[in-house]
Amino acid sequence: MARAQGARAQMALAYETVYGTPPVTGFRLMPFARTTLGSEQPLLESELLGYGRDPLAPIKDAVTADGEVVIPIDVEAFGFWLKAAFGQPVTSGTTPKTHTFQSGNWTLPSMAIETAMPEVPRFAMYSGCVLDQLTWQMQRSGLLTATARLVAQGEAIAAATAAGTPAALGLQRFGHFNGTVKRNGSSLGNVVSAEITYSNNLDRIETIRGDGRIDGADPAMAALSGRIEVRFSDTALITQAIDGTPCELEFNYSLGANASFTFTAHAVYLPRPRIEIAGPQGVQATFDWMAAKATSPARMCTAVLINTLAGY
Image 1 (spheres, helix red, strand yellow):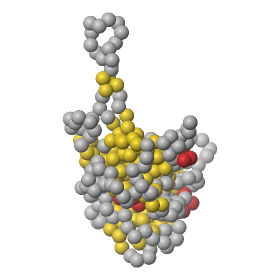
Image 2 (cartoon, helix red, strand yellow; image 1 turned 135 degrees about the vertical axis):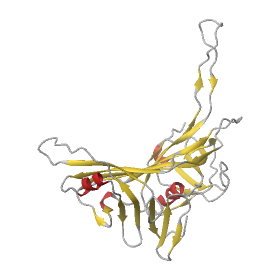
Image 3 (tube, helix red, strand yellow; image 1 turned 90 degrees about the vertical axis):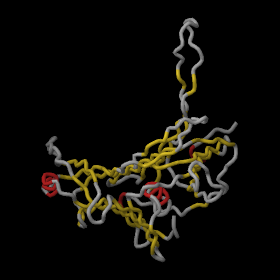
Image 4 (cartoon, one colour; image 1 turned 30 degrees about the vertical axis):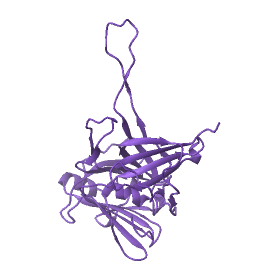
């Protein structure tokens, strides 16, 4: 009997035309490190009395389908997750292509995602997947990955794939070594680490249905926040926090002219942090920042992915 192994697992993704209806074609093979995407249905303990000390059979509760996918931040495949987070990009240029994603869209695309364990065999198709949150960290070393939190409508299990033969993408990963942080267009020095979290704050439409699934997941007010940890060397960030004025933070990864990813938060507000002296080592300050809609451009953030892919 074959046993499932993560090394043989695969993930295929395609955008849906109709929410909750997986397309027949158009699937792409997605690189991923791990996933918790799945469907669960808890049991409700019987509350009835008068049948003795032994409880009656439990009752099934509503079905919940959601989870996280840990993905590499790479040159091509990451654009599919950016589209899920922000909506359809504006693509320009010939070679390379510039894909510009902007916050503030009222509608988000839904996806069909199939996770495959072919040795069992088990092919789980998750329909109506909408991206709730996208987060990643910047640091000096290590593997650069992002975590996508998804809300799905349901799960369908089959013994054969429904994704056909997914088209593979060229995998070219960014690394922490390729990352830079800028503040108001100038390099921000002494940054030890940074964290970026973009949330769509999805509202699950939990209507009464015979199959126990949700009717949809609508985006509510978006949120962009994060954290930067810096070696305390000057008072520029402290002064900004005290004054309450915003700045622009730019997080960039580059592998050359044809491969780069730039995420810009246009109006970032910094809190006034506690400056602690913990010992003889260097003093560090941590800023838990929040972003808001800027005056110009009139949006909260912009993500620009440059590659040779025709479009998303």
